[in-house]
Image (cartoon, rainbow, N blue to C red; front, side, top):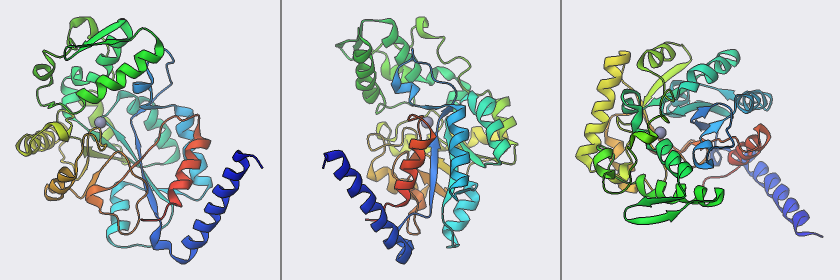
Length: 335
Ligand SMILES: [Zn+2]
C-alpha cells in the first residue's frame, strides 16, 4: 500500500472515531466557530503573498456561505453567539463572521454578499487606520520590497531580487515590525527603515473605509462594530498604560464617529508573536464581553470568551478546502 493510501485510511478512521466520540460526549467538541476574515476582493498575482493572504475572493466567500448552509451550519451575530455561550443554549454548527481592520472592500464587495444570504457579521475597527491610512505599514513594506533589489532594515541588508526572496524578506521584516511599539510608529521606525518616504505613499490610499462609510455599514442591521485598538498596535510592543490608552482612544473614537462603543474586541495581529499570556490575562479586566485571537480553532462550551479562538479563512484554493478544514476543526476534541 502506498503511504498516501495509508494516510487516507488513518484520516478517515480518525474522523469516524471522533464522530462516534462526539455522539456520546458532545461537550468535548466545538459547537461553533468564529470565522476571521480581512479583505474580500479578487487576488492580484503581482502582489506578495504576505498581504494577498489577507484576501478571500467574492466567489470563494459566497461558495463558502452556500456550502456551509448546505452542510447544516447556521450563521449568527456575535450577540447571539455570546448568548448561546453564556446561557448554555443547546446549539451545534454555529458560525459567526468577523472581519478585521475595516477594509473598503468589506462595504463594496462583502456587504452585498452578506445581505444576499442574510449573514450577520462584525467588523473590528482600528480608528487610527481610518484617520490616517498611512499607519497601514504592511502595504508600504510590500511596496518597498517590490520596488528594490536590496532593502535595509535596522542596519542589515536583505537581498530581495527574486520573487521567492521578496516573499521571505517580507515575512522576516514584517515579524520584526509587528512587535514594535506602534503608538508612534513613525518615530519607532525612523532609524530602521525608510518606510514613510513619499515614494511609497500611494499604497494605502482608498484601502480602508472612510468614517462616512464605516457609519453607513454600521447602520446595517447585520453589522456589529468591534474594537481593535486605536493604532492597530501589537500588544507585545506596548506597556499596560499604553494599552489602556489605546483601548480608551479606540472607544472614544467609535463613540465620536458612530455614536456607539464596542462590546467585543479582537487583538491586532492576534498571534502568539504579538499576544502573550500576560496580555490575555490583562484583557480579562478591560470590560469587554468577548476578546478574540486570530488563531486557534472552534468554540466549545468551556471556552473562555475573553480569550476566544478564531478560525481565520484564506482563499486557500477555494471553498472546498475551507470546508474541509472547518469540518476538521469541528471534529477536534478539547485537550
Ligand atoms: Zn487587524
